[in-house]
Each structure stands twice: as structure tokens, then as C-alpha cells.
Length: 132
Image 1: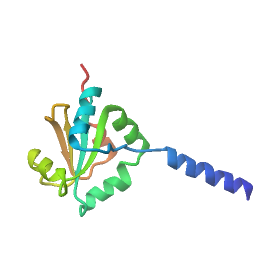
Image 2: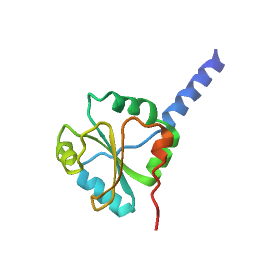
Image 3: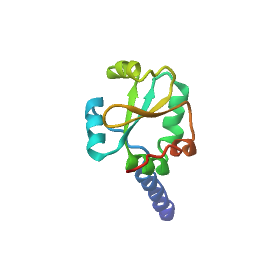
Image 4: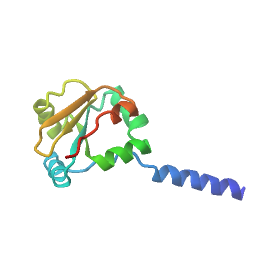
């Protein structure tokens, strides 16, 4: 019994510390400023609450530790509902018409890459930022 309790605790602790993508809080302007300061691109998960593939990404891909390790190290990550608040203007600015859309934006607010739809980890990892 004691052994089961210890193993259960270790399993739950491993899950709690195996974090995926950390999405930034705050408005888009502050996210851009952070990206510029850190010399990183912004990764935007442009989603809508009703979108099935968006929900699957949240459930199956974003929580994975390798995904989090890669994206947290290389990007400033933002999750933005494109049908609410500032997301409405961002959807217009970046011509987001399909969900999910993944935008890679530089610190000046310019789009440098986009991917559309449910994608696996290998596809998400396929976009590599070239460092100068």
C-alpha cells in the first residue's frame, strides 16, 4: 500500500512538472515587446473556442514536454482567440480565416511564417528560426 502511494505521488509529480508550451499573459503589444527584447519570434496559436482541431492541439500537442521545451526556449508564445477582444483586429491584420492558424511574428509585428490546421509535433518542430 505504501509503495503504491509513493508511486502514485511520483507519477503525479512527474505530470505536474512535465510542462508543455507556456503561453504568455497580457496584450499583444507587450508580447511583441518581450519578443523584441529577447530576440525571439512570437508564436501565436490563433484559435476560436468552437474549433475542434484547436481543442485537440490543446489536449494532445501543446502539453507535451518536448513541444514545451522547444517552443519555450525559442519563441514567446501567445494563445489568442481571434473572435474576441484584440484577436478580432489581429485576425484582420494577419488575414486569419481558418482555425487553427499558427503565426510566427517578429518583434516588429511582421509575419515570417504560418501553418494551418491540426499538426503533430514533427510538423510544429519543422519551422526553425535561423539565428544570425
